[in-house]
Image 1 (cartoon, rainbow, N blue to C red):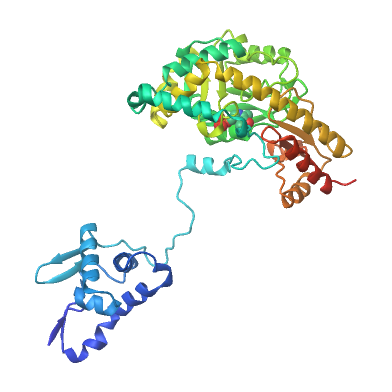
Image 2: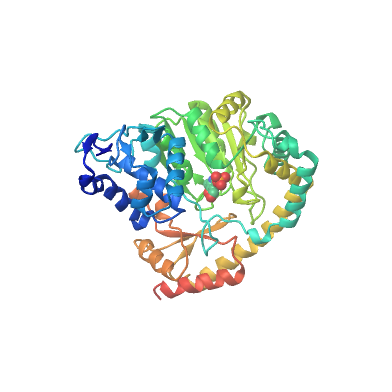
Length: 499
Ligand SMILES: Cc1ncc(COP(=O)(O)O)c(C=O)c1O
């Protein structure tokens, strides 16, 4: 007689071969499944037993075969079976009792019959708002004409490496510690100096927050300044990254149309809690907000106690004359939050941007930063500070501005020559991309055809909130492309455009 512990019965060895397979055959089939064939034999045995426990084949208190029997059944060595049992004991799945055997030590909660995981994650209402935005993904490859990428082939990488090595040598240990949530002080000073001189921003280092991205700034702004149902005026068409941040906070967007002088406010619009603007180069058309409109919007913000978010994302790349100074410099009431990024001026994966806030908002933003992610990487902040302070940033911007201007001119010329009978480029003084308008109803089909030829043509229609306001067109990024690449890209587009 042998005790077959799986069943807790006294059974004659005669029956053993009939009973034993009930559990072991399930284990053997699990062990042999081709999708579980990776890893060492010990890992495979462990995986088989874990799956059997999770799947309900084995339940709490059940006794397992001896390691000798398991080894025989699965066709592995006894050492392997022993090692698997010991590992699963260490993980808490099994319990081994001297002289008694090996038992399943845990219960896996099973779903009541009829309930199946539906695949729909259980999200909070905030989570659902975030997911409903669809998010934004920036292009990871500089394909023609992916919008918004700077030319990284022209980046002074050797110098950057030297500065990185120097910072590690001089203050490596300090830079590995936790940092100031507001940002590394020398970088805040360098940014305050730069935006005051180059953009006319009225601030000191105490008002500068160093952040991971403009997107993080928008998210912080939404979290701290907007309640559910608050109205946010957005340029129409406008920047989806900002739309996403504000709608995620439950705000209601109010599309305000844009003409040659930028956002065009009017009497019928509901009172805004916040106005989001890209005054230097409106995103996506590139037009500049006129001085008259700037003053009108500042007065309106003061009257209606609204915040203005000035997203100055690529003002450094202005080609025709001087760019207008920042609106923040005209603000006397402390209503403007000024936002800039190094994603375009240095490189996108640096993940450094800056937000200049009115003095009263410094403390709330600093605290909020600690609630989110603490601070940005110290080493890259220190390298960027050095890059600015040693004058390399200004030199790099001068060089890149010239390079991009020549590429913008080249793209304009190519578009006019090869697509001009069909597509109309938007006049704009700067930026890293060119808006090109298409006849109504053409964008979707032409974009698909362009894609088949390896050309990415981000659409303009999707930049509008209101379907009825949509205009078809493309936003052609040119900054990262050589003249040859621009020419080839436009030639491909010319192939799909009606003659
Ligand atoms: C209007 C606008 N703001 C900001 C950014 C930069 O964003 P980030 O700093 O999050 O990389 C972009 C990038 O395309 C943009 O188009």
